[in-house]
Amino acid sequence: MLGFLTARQAGLDDPLRLRRAESTRRVLGLKLNPDRDVDRVHGNGINTIDIEAVEGRYMLSGGADGVIVIYDLENCSGKPQYTCKAVCTVGRSSRYVHKFSVETVQWYPYDTGMFVSSSFDKTMKVWDTETLKPAEVFEFEGNVYSHHLSPIARKHSLVAVGTKNPKIQLCDLKSGSRIHVLQGHRAEVLSVRWSPRYEHILATASADSKVKVWDVRRASGSLFTLDQHNGDKSKAASEAVGVVL
Image (cartoon, rainbow, N blue to C red; front, side):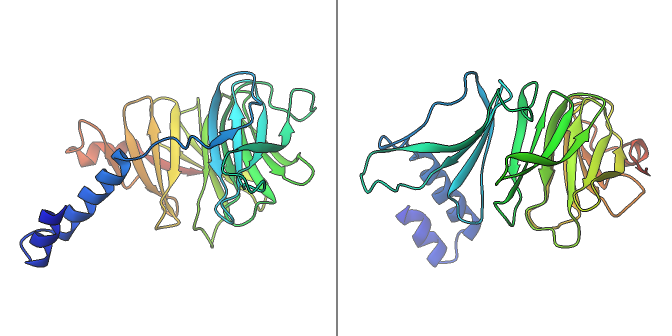
């Protein structure tokens, strides 16, 4: 590390190289915390988790059993060793529980009073955290693999949804409806992710072995496609067409 610092100080090395080296060193040094545990609530595997960004205190988890659990990560005991407790659960006894595996859970970025879950039961539910009841339910024709709310958006409240259908669905939380679809993939959409820097930029990944990047304000298709044929830009553009419902 001293060698990197000396080279950086002398102007002989790229500052990004020092940043990458330090990031790599820290990642390789990560270890499990032996003093912290989490309540065992799920009866099957846990597919997805999300920690809210407002306080960094509450964690959502969604399981293969359809159960959703909210944990309090705060150590209120004052002891060095503690177990993070489940504060509430949408369990199998709830009439609102997902019927099949929960694939994605996510807190609303600006408020812990709401979270969103999606499942293989072909639904995406918008939950009221206080009542643990769905405020809105979106239904789809196929299994839901992934959804994502933008962490920075101020001009829209869209949830991008990837399903068994090759079309990416855009659902508006304000109107409670599906307002837009993005066409271009040739197989199910396995992952969707909004840009952390630009609120209208969306990336999607599919079983067709392609990643597409979209500007959802445009109706002319994806901005570009990442795959083994990435050099053929005209082909990538011609495959993607945005359609307004």
